[in-house]
Every structure is written in C-alpha cells, then in structure tokens.
Length: 107
Image 1 (cartoon, rainbow, N blue to C red):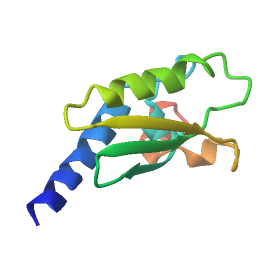
Image 2 (tube, rainbow, N blue to C red):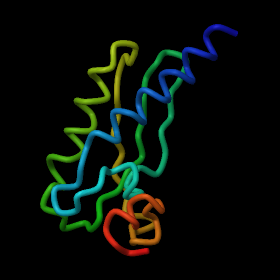
Image 3 (cartoon, rainbow, N blue to C red):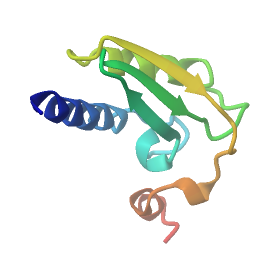
Image 4 (tube, helix red, strand yellow):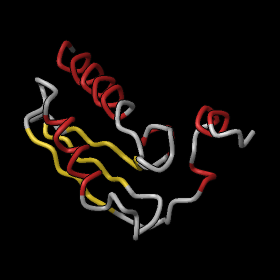
C-alpha cells in the first residue's frame, strides 16, 4: 500500500516539474498548454512521457524533449525517462487548459 502512495507522489512530482518547462514562444508551461499527452510510470520507476509540440516545425523540436527528459530525470526517485514525440493527434489550441487560455487572453 505504501508503494502506491509513493507512486502517486512521484506522479505529482512529475507534473510539478512539467509545469516548470515553458514553450519559448508561448508564455505558458507545456503541461497547461496540453503538450503532454500521457505520463506512464512503471514499478521500476521508469517514466515514459508521450508529448507533442505546437507544430512539427517547432523551433524547439530538438531541445524541448531533451529538457523534459533531463528535468524529469533529476527527480530523485525516477530511474529512467523516455520521451516519445507524437503528432497524432496534432496539437491545437483547444488542448490548452482553461488556465492557459485565460493567461493568453483567449477566454
């Protein structure tokens, strides 16, 4: 049972870290932007993040996934991180949280 709580805490830690990473073109973090499609954590504390970019030609296509990987890897209890980039479904502004839309004056 204790293990389960730790996994929940780990999930919360991952989300907290994701909220510190910003898209350089939009002043909103990548989590609220809806760029993170899924986060998987297995029993070995290996993390897999399924994410997208605002466009396939995004200027940070090389660096943003690496930044996500490095920052998540810096969480003590994370053993390994794999980032999978996908453009299916393609990102659009409807994937942003209410908070992000508010921040950008879209509400």
